[in-house]
Image (tube, rainbow, N blue to C red; front, side):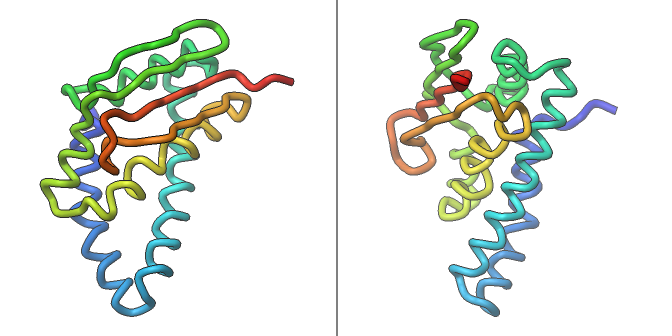
Length: 154
């Protein structure tokens, strides 16, 4: 069985998770509901990072590039690579169909938690020796997402 592209997986997840989060927020408050959701998503992202490293057969930056290719399946992301070398992999996402999907579903407020927040914690599972920084996202209105991965110095 061929796995669903990640964009489709995220849309299915969002249509199930969003009503649950909204109901949970009505019971325990928006702040608490978001905190619980963020914790669950972080755990899932770490697990996904471990699984991605296993799937591509390693966890250095060349293997990370292979994982990023999976994020792009079906035109889900358009990106410009700025730096691609042994110690650094840097790119800007110029189109994000994940952000477009959350907007279309009326879930722009949950999109950063359900999608963008995964990126930093995914790398912890993929390889804790890789540092990740990002200062802006399309999801939150920027012109691009600035992904910067670097090997940490000892």
